[in-house]
Image (tube, rainbow, N blue to C red):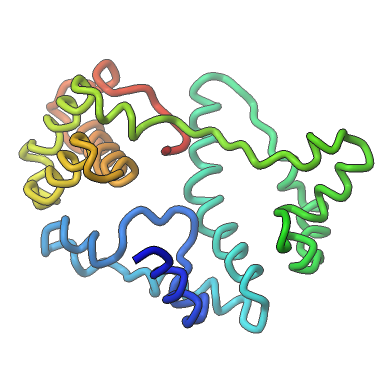
Length: 229
């Protein structure tokens, strides 16, 4: 049903449904694909509640941003940028994370961060004083990589399938369930790109660092990326 999730979320407090930008699997779905021995990890609520407790009484937008700043930025997107840039001898700067900029940004009312017509409202107001309207009003442009399309190419499908049907994969996952994700995506029945990529990179990581007698995987892995499409 189109709009079902919107209606469901609209009736719940943000603490019960927003878990951040890095969400890939629903909790029940994750449990379904991993072996029972791994069903006792911390729950989503165990992870997010300490952060929500620090912003009690704040508006929902502030709560969501606080959660992403403490989980997604630190443990995901900034981590990737730092590792990939250092791997290629690049020095990356993040000016919007300057302490003074962050201190000022934290005081901006929610209505100046996002409103009915645009995101980053305060920044766009400032940009309009120095930039053309087309630039000030331009939509955010990320760094997407067409992983979902690559996985539908036979050579990458076969490479991922080799990992998904390996003895190492069977140690952690239900082979039947993860192959269903892969096959449904390959056949165009679903867009499971991020789910497949998450499992695949975990298996590559495990092979590299825990299978000491295995061959190096650097030559066989696809292009490294910093963001999933």
